[in-house]
Image 1 (cartoon, rainbow, N blue to C red):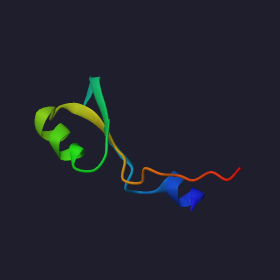
Image 2: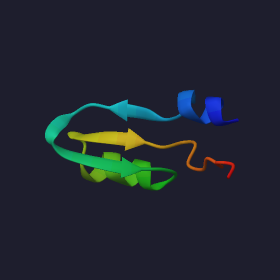
Image 3: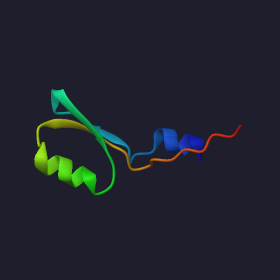
Length: 53
C-alpha cells in the first residue's frame, strides 16, 4: 500500500502560474480551478499513508 500511495496516479501537479500554487483535494479542487484558473495546483487524490512503527 505504501508503494501505491507514493506512485498513485490520482495525485497530480497541474502547472500554471509559478507565482501562485495551491494544494487541494476533493471538492475544493473544483473551487480552486474556478476561482484561480491560472494557479498551479497539486491535487491530492490519495491523502492518507499509514507508516508502520
